[in-house]
Image (cartoon, rainbow, N blue to C red):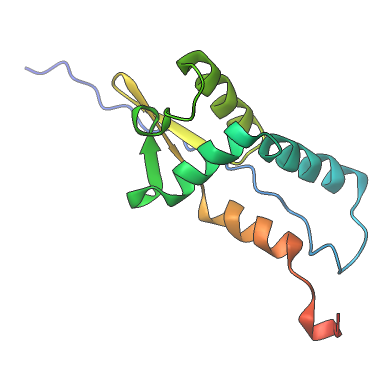
Amino acid sequence: MSTVKVLPLLEQEAVVPCCPPLTERPLTAEEAERTALMFKALGDPVRLRLFSAVASHEGGEACVCDISDVGVSQPTVSHHLKKLKDAGLLSSERRGTWVYYRVEPAVLAAMGALLTTAASKGV
């Protein structure tokens, strides 16, 4: 008789920037806080390289072991990945010893929409 119990997976809520294009209307204070956190996280060259490495990795996700060669120590890589995750730009999943990171497509779409000019408004 097996004593293995299958546990349900907990869904992580993705933090998605929820702002309209900058040309549409002024941001609310809450939208500005969330957006500033996102841009602040991407304002560091190491974080931007890590974010790019995850976003461009085959299969849409990357093991930390595959993206840590950015010229800083492993603890510093972990620190930067945590900052990106805290800003809602990355999600992660532990598989055994390794942690896999992914950029949710909705995050990339929201970032692009935020900076897109409203062409239909003649801007």
